[in-house]
Length: 309
Image 1 (cartoon, rainbow, N blue to C red):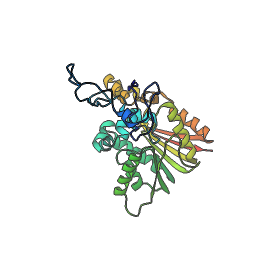
Image 2: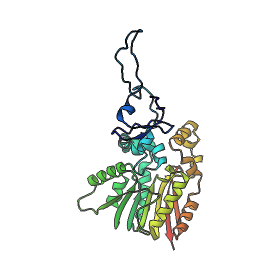
Image 3: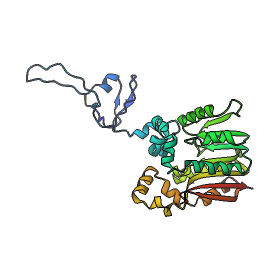
Image 4: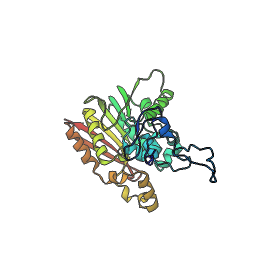
């Protein structure tokens, strides 16, 4: 029997079902035909053939052809997130590694505490009301929000079930038994599963720079949609002044940083306030006030945006 090309064979079918294999669309209809390679005499010297050996279709030492990140591109995980950030946000060992104070401070050049305190100070200036944290956050920020802020309800939305599980466990440890319940929602920030004007305050903590432009615009539009008229959005992320910062002028460090964060350069170059104003217009509201606080010489920033009718 002529064997089809195995270069792109799907190895998922192992229960006797017909599976499409190879680029030419040929079919195998039995497990035996799928699992046994062509066989022939082994160590024969012209006499009778020795016992034949059934070889596996894929040698054990061949290079893996399917990229690792594709294993994470399922259950609603966006392709860009799985492709570029699987190792830091979706892979369980990576989640445990990065959710550590020392690692977080290394990643943020020692500014994690200053950034979280600035975000909390910004949130404490006005009544919180119904609060949405879009995307889970490494470190203690969510626990600090739950412990220190007075809000009517706390909701946390993330596309990763593992990230939600880690945040749920941290809050269970850090919060008292009389604390208000927290709502956890697994959904993509580009299409939030909430009604219009469901929240009074929203927080985006180092989320936007990890998104390609189209996803960033969708997240901002959805955030504006679920915020009430008169609601506010607090954003903590990289600053637009970063190109003039000493760390940015260090070429090797900058290249490593932008290699690990492929959308960061575009985010720094974008006009964030103009993007928010466009998102507000799509949601039928408008930006009435913007307050931006630079952190670490402008390498980072905390932005508070208030919406109105």
